[in-house]
Amino acid sequence: MRMWCLQARATNVLRWALLSLFVGIGLFWSSNAQADRFKFRWGGEIGSSLFIGLQPSTSFIRENNLGTLFNYRNTNHITLKLNPRFGRQIAAKANIELRNLNFSPGMALTDQPDVLGKPSSDLEDYNRVLPVSVRVNELYVDFYGIIPNVDMRIGQQRIAWGTATVFNPTDNLNPYNLENPIDFQQRLGVPAIKFDITAGEHVTISLIDVFMFTPPVLPITLFRQATTIDTSVLVPDGFRLGTINSTETVELPLFDVTNMIPAAKIAVNLDVINFSASYIYGRLYIPAPKSVPITGVSINTGEQNIAITQGANPDALKLVSCLNTDRTTPCEVNASAEDVRLVFPRVHIVGLDFSTSLGGVGFWAEAALFIPTEAVDTKFTLPQFLLDGMVIIDPNLPNKIAQPLRTFKDQPYIKITAGMDYTFPGGWYFNLQYLYGFFNEQSWDELHHYAILAFRKGFLRDKLLIQLSAGIEIDSQRTQREKDLDGNEVGLGFIINPEIHYKPADSATIILGGIITRGHEGTTLRLFQALTQVYLRAKFTFGG
Image 1 (cartoon, rainbow, N blue to C red):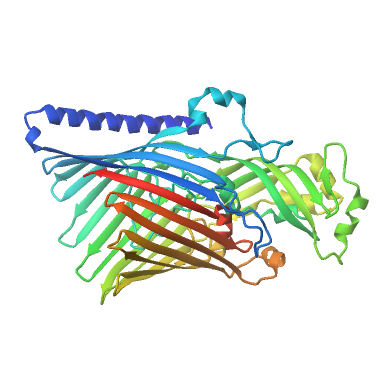
Image 2 (cartoon, rainbow, N blue to C red):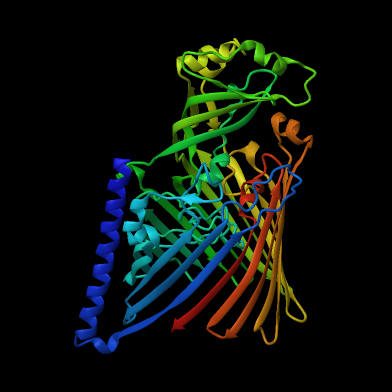
């Protein structure tokens, strides 16, 4: 934790140093005799979003946990974009955001489940009543022709790679910003230096070094299932796993030269086709568990919940019914874990992509080969009193727990995206994509198939826009446990996201939309079913 704080301080120092340099250069140029060569553009956006979770009473996945993550949430922001330029040699960009985030905070009170409780001391702090944050999304300086045919960019920046729409397996230099967990277009800027070398009329070579690893903004409560902890070692024969409640600690790499992230890309842009090849020596953005200290275990027999406590083993007679092979529903093992350690594995990433257009139809594809440098083995530990209690149920359990589990494999795997789009007469736009592997799927046996279709159509001279996105997921590599839970050999999931856009003026937009997601056990879209919601957004842009 201390190292994380030191890294955060170092990042803040770098950001504010760049901002001070940015402002200082602007003041100098504006007052200098060469002010006539100095140009300054600015603009921004003011916006507000309201999310309300939906919790329908029925679900084909036999659960009622839908819409609980965004039960109520409101964000308000103002973004300021500054673009000074000095002649043809130097330019800069700053994207600074002031954001207020309001959501349903606190804990449900035991005597009033429908009432949330908060420490009274929170009322003394404005930032806890109405949280406000200042964010430096981008802040960099460009030097054009610093040497012949070489441009340099230094600072916090977004380095976007790939030709697909939204889902880009080759785009791995900027971590996800999943503060809104369903908005996959948002990424964090990273402190980096980038050289673009023009090698002829059609070829550009990019050399990049990211100074430090920046972790993603990740709702760990939503993605806890995505860490792929194989907890079958905790489940005795004849039982099934219920839930694991855990707290996590993220281990970040040290801020030093050995943990920098180098990258390179060569792009060829021709009249009929564009393609590129890239390489990154980076890290994955979904952490893997390194250690899982189990601190508590209970067994639900269906009639009662039996906890294994210090100094008192469970009554073995109470569990006889759990071992009865005639039971239609196995007994559940529930556990709690504290201080689960998560790490971000180091990987080599080799990417290829292309885009072209034929007869007005756009085509694109990209693929990324991920080559892990090492595996991650997860070690489970239990206090002796828990081992003593579990031995009554399964004498072989201590031997199973003693063996570390490989939760992140050191085997290469490939992710692919391919798609096409076309605008039909009348302005009907369609976009179809196929994905092999979502961003949180990080080994061959985790990769699922996806098909995503989006269309939009404008009316009233584009003052009104109707948009619909829908996707399906197919998991053909289900585990036996997942098959046993619902009896399906293939796991299925779907997502539907309709939106209505209204533009009362060219610079203002109001968006009304909703999201509904379902998925069988083990599917990635199942993670998002807590995001079933409706939302209302409004934004106003200003400046040039």
